[in-house]
Image (cartoon, rainbow, N blue to C red; front, side, top):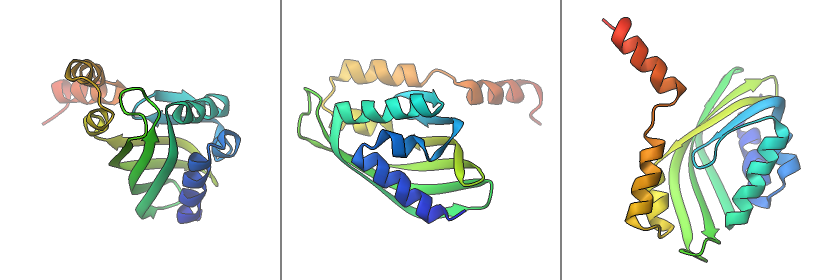
Length: 158
């Protein structure tokens, strides 16, 4: 696996809005856990998610750095930016930093997930404080990994 090459193809397809090329980087049943749009499973859903990106923004740039990978898993830090098409922030440059995690199945991505500070993006998007609070409260709800941790904490932790 040439992880830096995969990152280049991933960023290039995303920036170009080439949903078919982007989805082809994933296994047929692969998943993409997007920090805004949630989990998408399968190439059709992943392609639709990328189209949704481009409905709300343009001029996407995804710059990966410090890639680290073995045959099973890869991590890379990133800076992501785009110009908003949303009414509150039309034309405004939105930029934030994050971390990506890729799980591989051979040369393809079986699972992708990311972490970034959504609040930074929401403020740049010009969302009203009440809307930001509502969105962040929704994202603060425990997901499957957090629920498993809480169960472990309550029953198995030293």
